Image (cartoon, rainbow, N blue to C red):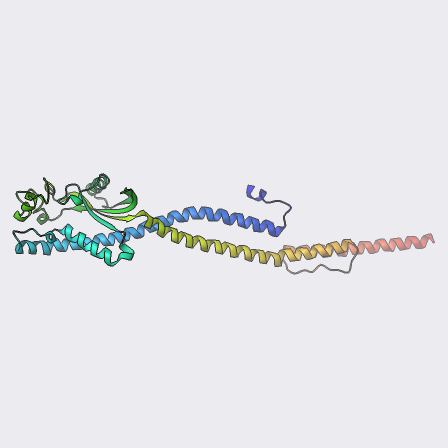
Length: 321
C-alpha cells in the first residue's frame, strides 16, 4: 500500500508502528468527522422538529378550545364590540408569546406565525417563500401525503430552520367571519369600516382547503451550535481513545517485541565477538520466542563447529611435531 511507502525504511519498528497508527488516526478522524457531523446536524434538526411539533400541537389545542368555547361565549356577551380575544389566531399568538417568555432559555429564539395567503390581519400575510411552502402543503394534502415541510430559509437576512404544518378549515363555524363581508358579524364589519382591516382581506375562505401554514422558525445557528457542541465532545472522546490505544500499543510493543529483539541483538553481537558464554533467553512462545530458539540452535551448532575445528587444528599440530 502507498500509505506504507510514506514511512522511511530506516526507522525503528516502534517509530514505524507509531507513525502508521497516527496516520490511521488522522484519516479516521477526518472521515468520521465528516460523516458524524452530518449525522449530528440531522439529529439536531430532528430534535428541533420534535419541539416544534409539540408547540404546534399545543397551539392547535388552544386554537380548538378558543374556537369551540371562547369565541361563541364572547360573541354572545358582546354582539356590538368585536373582541380580539375571540379570534383563535390572536389567542394563539398571545399564548405563544407568554410561553416563550416563561421558557426563555429553551424557546426564546422560537418564532411562530400563522402565514396566510389572504389573512384578516396584514401581519399574518405570507411572504413569497411562505406562499411556496403553502403550495407544497396544499399539494401534499391533495395527494393525501403527510402534511409537513421543513428546511432552511433566509429571513430578514438571517438563516432560519423552519417547520411548517398546514392551516385547513375543517369546521363551518370557522367560516362565519371569513365568507364575505356582508355575512360577517356586524362588530367585525365595523373594523373594516374604520380601517382596522382593509379591503377584502380574510374573506372567501373555503372549507377543507389549505389556506395557510402554521410555521415555527428557529435560528439556524441553534441547529449548528447544538451539532457543534456534540461534535466537539465526540471527536474529543475519539481522539483520547486513539491516543490511549497508541500509548498502550507502544508499551506492549516495547515489552514484548523491542526488548526481546534488543536482547537477541546483544547476545548475537557478543557471540560474533567470540563470547560463547552468553545465552539467548526465550521469553515467550510467539514469533520472537521461536526466533530465540532458532538463535540458540544456531549458537549450539556454531559452538560444535568451532570445537571440531579446534580439535582438528590441535590434531594437525600434534602430527607435525
